[in-house]
Length: 226
Image: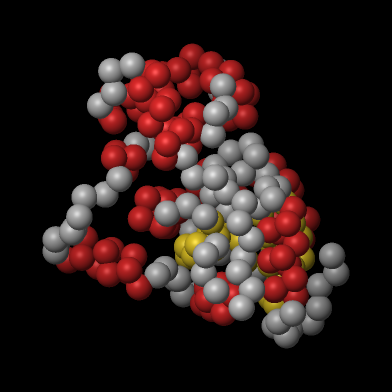
């Protein structure tokens, strides 16, 4: 895609074509923004980042070959000056802080209105950080030593990779396929599964699997047009 003078270049990374299409439609209507590339997985995202030199990358949490959290880390390592905004269906209370720790500069859910998505893009492009007011308050409470309020999800006890495996188990993916997708051995995934089981307090793998399926977040919603 050819760039345009004065427009900030946006790389969109999402494994659902309809989401990429609608997001590109939304962004390209703006006088100061242009989608310069699209990718459906981490490998394509790294290739496109090298080829099109974007000013910002918009990344989903769930991708075909890895979690967006891992991609954020890869982008930060390969392109330290490239800001990343996460746009996801996943609950910000569980994923936003992980994304920020990995190097993202913002987190917004796909349920937000068009205006907020554009606000988030521009704030990150201008060197700021975008999170919801609710999350900002929670982070400030933690930094200031204030009360954390209600207890978070048990999944907060998991590492980034364990959470990735947990989500894939919940989506019904077999252990062998998870290992293939994450480019690790089956034994490694089985070890992660055991750690997850212990951290969440389950006695058997079948109990863990039921819980994972019940709590899996299925991606696929498009950005809202209002």
